[in-house]
Amino acid sequence: MPTLVEQLGKDPVRPLVITDCVELIDAQVKQKGFVIKSAYAVIKGIKKKFVPEVVDALLDDWLGKLQPHYDKWAASKTSTFSDFLVSRSDDVAEDLLSVTDARAEKTSHTTAKKMYFKMRDGAKKNVIDAMPELARTLEKHLQGAQAVAS
Image (cartoon, rainbow, N blue to C red):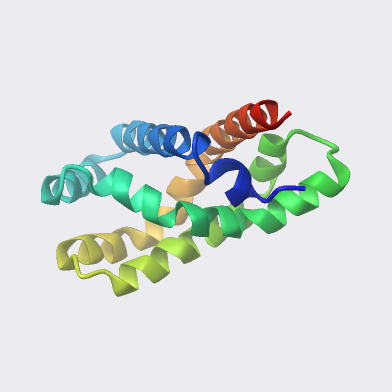
């Protein structure tokens, strides 16, 4: 069975996944309070393509962190993949954030780093809140990738 990176991290699917993830992030931020909206505006102000570039740079690592969840789901398929991820939102969020934590530690963008760590405590809740939409997005692209492969 192909990995998530092979299914979602390669052309022609990858750019679609990145676009949808950026749109998801934008939509989630719009629902948040002033501090998060302001921090996001600062990040986007640093560099217009910052968010899509970061999603692109981290996508393979995020997919790698999702792979064990995908493998567990694929072994039984007692629900949809999106339902499986949502039911494990706490663990999945922590796995995804481990990637962004590592990236933030290494970034040379000091303003972005400061903003990230200032908001890290609330990040897990935000990822959990976004999990249903993220899971549906991934499942949609998995179905598309599998249709193209067959």
